[in-house]
Length: 221
Ligand code: IPE
Ligand code: MG
Image 1 (cartoon, rainbow, N blue to C red):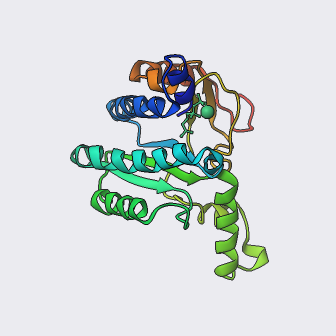
Image 2: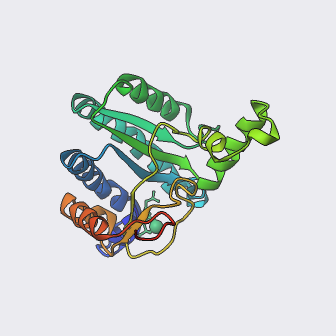
Image 3: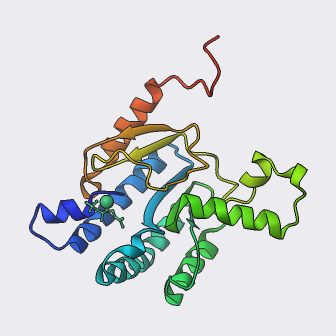
């Protein structure tokens, strides 16, 4: 969900105003995704690298993400959305935020319409490291270490690998997002800044995705 800071700067506002404006985009994209039958939507809310930002911005983002849950979890629950999180639940995340994350997960865990997976304190490398740690903790023998056993220890093995990854704000980077899961994802890049991103932009990206030919390493036969 990139481009919040630039969106705000262009308007002479504080960067945090851009994060705030991104809330509408997130709501619209979530409901837009449901309307076209998307089963899983992962949004990158806060990365393991975002702790480097100024403390005020980090504090804002912690409060903001907690506020988002408060403002939307009941509506999402009614809509049948399962709320999940990918990322490290370590000491850097305030306890009250961890508590509300768990609350939202618990409330919505049986929902089937769509999974909204919020990548929070998430890093793709950290996820792989955590999976390897788990392999060792499980005492998996060397010969049993394969893609299946690693994948089974990612944060959400029950979610299919993403078919489509959309990067907003004209950046052409992966930025440590879903490294393992994206191996065969299709990418759509757009200049639209996240606070301006709406379901029409999502639908356009899906149409672009539908025009792609996916071979998964095979050749056309
Ligand atoms: C993305 O917007 C939001 C988070 C990383 C939390 P940015 O804050 O990265 O916005 P730009 O890239 O500075 O415009
Ligand atoms: Mg950015």
